[in-house]
Length: 392
Ligand SMILES: Cc1ncc(COP(=O)(O)O)c(C=O)c1O
Image 1 (tube, rainbow, N blue to C red):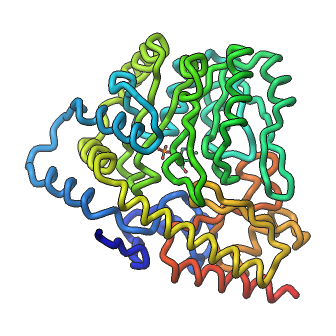
Image 2: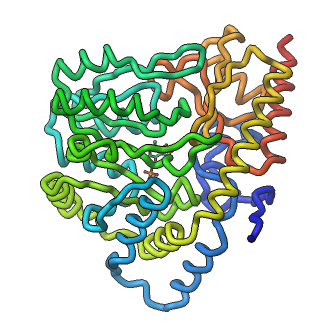
Image 3: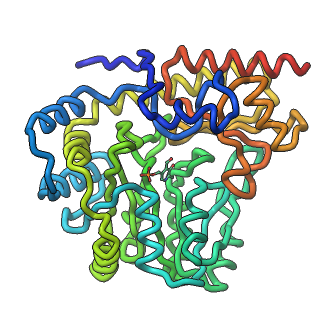
């Protein structure tokens, strides 16, 4: 069995990597260690790089369609990883998950329709609704000292008031939850009862940690499957975000037809031939690499929790059930959000995403990306603990 090297530090500066090349613009100074945007500092596994090189060796990169193997690869991965029987005919393409959210808004709702999200949540959820003249409805998550649950009473009352669509983050960025079967059943029951269409963003569904399991929403029963648009991608899992290749699973034929129409009407369905190659090989051959990645991420999280808890137990660290995005609460510092951001940037020289960007409920929090070599995580922790220490 090959052992992959996640300790290797790769210099991404100057490659156009937004995580690195936008540091000064975003944080106002160059010496900030970037731990913000959700991609990984690990190298893409060799079998994907080799497949791309092989395709690149063919000297014509003309218009290229997705062949059956693309759809079969998505279906095969859903079966092996999530015990989900997806027919390849129920799979379609999107050049990204945010585009898939926007296309779903355009395909299934009209201006003025109400679309529900659960803040604090990945912020393009807000813009993909509001930029298209739809009304944002928020069902804020309940936060019990960093442990998050859904507020089902509030959800039901908002659904009852007339919600057309819900944008569901599953697993949840930034709070790190892998929603349980029981929670999903309650949600599905309400969506069916109030005739709500659910766009389930499952981009993080391969990144389940510490024995947690991902249950695709659409696998609960036929009733919820018929009203679910599931968004998946190899982009987070295998570090391929720059290839802009994602997939949707839509089991209802009418909903699929409407999606295809909007994808066709917007002329963005062509895709990227290297993305097709990468998705196929990742989903065909990626399991062993992924097992090792998940193990590495778990160790990074445990290291972070141990070092932070030992020195500053007042920092609240939400449990990380999924994703490589850690949700940290710094309320004890008594700083307002601007001051906290300034403290992290100027004193700790760390580039986190500040909680309020994720909407209400994000106050006092910072999101830290731990998909980096251990030496980088240790450097970040040194900076953080040193800066916190300088306050006491
Ligand atoms: C929940 C969620 N959805 C979507 C995306 C981005 O997807 P894409 O780059 O495919 O548009 C991210 C990236 O962080 C995310 O966390």
